[in-house]
Amino acid sequence: MCGIIGINSNKSVSATIINSLKKLEYRGYDSAGIATLSEGLINEVKTEGRVDKLEKNSLVQNMEGKIGIGHVRWATHGLPNSINAHPHSSQNVSVVHNGIIENSTLLKKFLVEKGHKFKSQTDTEVIVHLITEHLRTQNIVNSIKKTLKSLHGSFALGILFKDQPDLIVGARRGSPLAVGYGPNENYLGSDSYALKSMTNKITYLDDGEFCFIKKDHVEFFDEEGTKINKKVLELSSDEKKYDKGDYKHFMAKEIDDQPITLKNGIKEYLDNTNNDINIYNFPWKINDISSITLIGCGTAYHSCLMAKYWFEELTSLDVSVDIASEFRYRKNRFKKENLYVFVSQSGETADTYAALDLCKNNGMKTCSVVNVIESSIARKSEFVLPIHCGTEIGVASTKAFLGQMLILYILSLKLGLLRKDLKKEIFIQKLKDIKDLPNLVEKTLLTDNKIQTISSTFNKAKGSMFLGRGFSYPIALEGALKLKELSYIHAEGYPAGEMKHGPLALIEEGMPVVVLAPRDNYYKKTISNMQEVIARGAKVLLITNKSNDNVISENIWETVVVESTNEDLLPFLLTIPLQKLAYYSALKKGFDIDKPRNLAKSVTVE
Image 1 (spheres, rainbow, N blue to C red):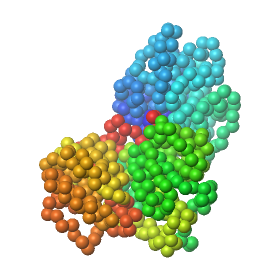
Image 2: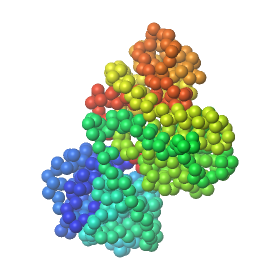
Image 3: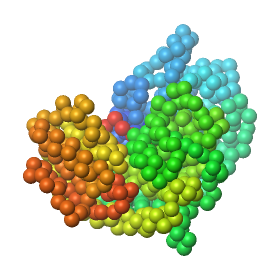
């Protein structure tokens, strides 16, 4: 959540900071601000709303300064307005902050007693006043060190000093932060995406570290203030993938890009020559693993639920799934033969990272499935499986979800083969089916026109349900989540067999209900559950796959038919119309599809 940019240069920086903030808006977009240092003064401009509004401000257009920091906000403390927007400044210090300071109330009380006056409702402002207080008696290194030790919670910080015209300080604990290197200028950013247009040379700060960014060099320090050396990583500088082209929204493009996402994953992981899967550097002996725990949040959690069915079907491993935000607060009984798999699109999800950190501290086997291989989760894991789906800008995940499912399915196949739970001939047939998947998804995308028409009914309803059994249940959850995220329509996903245990009371005349009923082992049972819903007056949208058998029910409102494949892979195809349904529902309501209200892409706070 929230986005940081900092630039120390030999030329004016305000326009470049604004352009970088536009790239970071997927991380937060309820307010924005910029501060530069010029002629010994901190110049600060902030506004509620989007970066476009900030850019149009005449004060920004005339802003001078060769060093500056900027921020886009996703509110945690205080209303989204210009007062609570970042940066927050005293006469001597200006700060931008991602994260949450959990002891801000106590710190504020201490600072007020020292005579400090606060303007905002934010937790961030205590950082400004703490640094200002320490600077009265300490040098900058000790002031930063003492301030960071006083803060409880998570943070990524960018800091300017009135009396230091060639210095930006960055600091990180829990929230990601990167340093970029350029000719006669250096950068600070909350992720590499905002920095890529300026440089492809990047260093990531680890927890507890801080840095001094000057025009011509960068110094790194550990939490004790001791200088340390850090590696410089070289990233791809290809910018074409970030362009939405002729699409109105990034999400529309990302939905249509899913065949490419699958092709990329298949190309990376499938060995056509040997009919095998390219996971040869698995760091553990297969017999040392008897169970697996899958951990994620939101859409990534749904991919973990999906994978549970696959691991149970294809291996003899004991499988459990955990929501990351719950995992580390329970009394976990860690077992050395358990493999913990952490799933995150950004690789920066705070709850998932905290769960990973707990497992690492207890000496557990850790594997991550991420889209960003330079991310915090990837760097902390013993073993990384990238999903290779490219940058995903739409806040509501689409292609990353399919990418996560693909890699988890491939991993379940590989472990099933290695453990001799899966016969070689069945394994080879399943590989063949995977290779057909991109083409089947491409054909399923052609359900577009029908979904556009159907979406109007959902917009008129006060709520909806998504039902599925077996492999279809996690997809029902994901379909409901997408509709909630984009259209702000109350939607719930349920196992179809659970309707009679309570949720059936919610069904009323005309309520739209999505029933996922592919021709699998659960098909007949799901159709029976569908009839229970129809009998209570629901308008049923049936989503099934092509078959010679027609569904016999004159009371089905609408039917969408996807392509056919083996049962394992049908969830990929069922996902497509649900993504389209959420997209068109939001489009007809005129909502901001790429940036839904109250949400952000990279969730770096608890």
